[in-house]
Length: 396
Image (cartoon, rainbow, N blue to C red; front, side, top):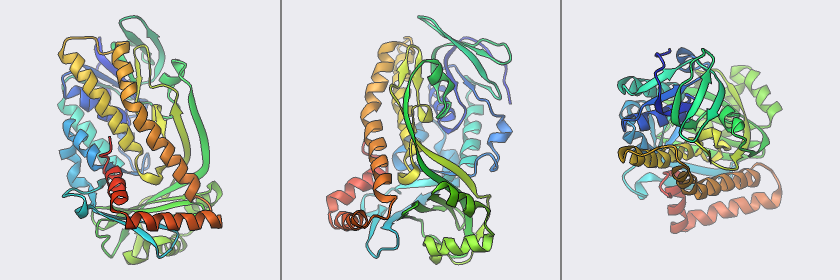
């Protein structure tokens, strides 16, 4: 789907994934003229074959999505997470969180990516100041003191005061600007599949830590759950191709035993896992958000929520400048954005990396320490409250 490209714009957003489209709705809701450039076709992005994953939306993120005019469109399609249980393998020592003990709100919500994208496209269609170039490819970027100009594959050359890169881990915009990134492979692959089951999940999210990686069962609507099963690449590949009866049997052994009869209702898809953190979040007339800025292991389910907080901070700064009649792409604005996001990025990326390395092994001393630590947190109300607020996205 392609609308005619008009120019100039206030902001061009490179990338029409969840982060890029959410950023567009945030700024478009404030009245800015926005162009979104995305390589994939609109229809392809709404297919479960393109993306069979679900996204965990923390309570704090739902408030930002509400400001974008998106939350009302996806709330009915999402399943609240009311309780969380964490355990090291099948140890009897578990760490349990109950949302009712920290307020009247759920920890977060699980929504299918295809439905999330459909809601974002619906909201974008309502905002007359947003233009989609989809599919379109950025072939070149030229910066000046006052504008950034893109050259697209159809020959058009839209320009704007600011370019926001939301074009993923291998961001063309980030690399074109010469921004380096620290990155490494975890040598782990996430297998993702949606299951239907005969017994209710009671809005309980489960996460078990095994030597190959975490095994998560995330509640979805209509007696369904999303499985995010992390393993070494060879093991994950074998799980993807094994017969369904055998696969379901292993699911029950891993942590789905209380869900009754289980049926896989989506393809088993594999996603290699990497750590990536850009050295800086900005360059002249350029800001990085989402996975153009950071990519993290799904162990804590906070990847998209970190991106939403990028959108919240940058969106507020741009809206304030726009309403004051100023230039939304100046260095001082971008420096304030980077400064406002540094601590959150450092804290969550570091904590997630440590968590993966601590739990993805079967070393006896570490296993004993993990179980002792889970037991201690369970007994300390202040510690449980801290981790509950982290899960809800309310620490920043």
